[in-house]
Amino acid sequence: MKAEWDKLKDAQTVTADGKHFELAANIGTPKDLEGVNNNGGEAVGLYRTEFLYMDSPELPSEDAQFEAYKAVLEGMNGKPVVVRTMDIGGDKELPYLPLPHEMNPFLGYRALRISLVEDDMFRTQLRALLRASVYGQLRIMFPMVATLKEFRAAKAMLDEEKAKLIADGVAVADDIQVGIMIEIPAAAVIADKFAKEVDFFSVGTNDLIQYTMAADRMNERVSYLYQPYNPSILRLIKHVIDSAHAEGKWAGMCGEMAGDQTAVPLLVGLGLDEFSMSATSILKTRSLMKRLDSTKMAELADKAINDCDTAEEVVALVEEYTQ
Ligand code: PEP
Ligand code: MG
Figure (cartoon, rainbow, N blue to C red):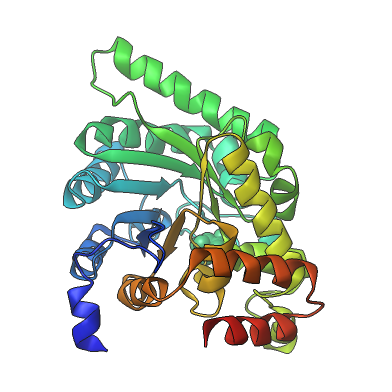
């Protein structure tokens, strides 16, 4: 197995019938790039920038952020890098940004909701990203978007900072894609509307599943409800992918489900374009995809969504189709 995976390091990701997919990595710091390159990552599909904030005793300066983003872009040698703007709140706290105590922090003040209020902090991050954009292929992604209004507000701030930098003579790339995470059911349901305005989607299944099933992702007592293969989740994902494609956009996934070996055949069948996972899962996923026929997986996904009633039935169907 190991020898086979090693051979796949520099190979493209193609199914048995020749369909291409992109296998990307999730990272938390520039140091993680070594693992991405050693495991044949074709892109960074999620750079969780909140670690930059959490590892610092104070708000990281624009220059400190610029250096980190530049290091990641350069380290990927022109391959795409999706940088997610900070996702603080929920279970992630900052010593220098006291947040109110909340009854339901995962349903509360977090991620983009904070960025849109603490806009000095957000604009600093956006400027650092824009300045770094000339060092590679940058894609900017906003987390926890529920409404189009939030996306438009964030995008307007990005456009304003870009115009200011250009007016000051600072070089900024002109091909930066701007997308959103799909991790709130409301956004998944109107993905067709979002798809007209964003450049891409990345499905954050860790949160999307918890919010769709109303089951805390950390709570063991309700972990039986945390069901990636439930037809409800698969239908949402299908709608997101189809909506992106209808507008000529791409759809990726950066939640744990993207590297889950039972989910991969279903996601191949649904036509997901980009799979972002921990670097150590990339080679085994490339090896699995090589053995899959995309037409057969499309049939599997269709049956899972339309004929199966439960997650257990979906798992049994995947086993039948991948034997
Ligand atoms: C997700 O919600 O799936 C995701 C990738 O974001 P995080 O795990 O950082 O919340
Ligand atoms: Mg999330």
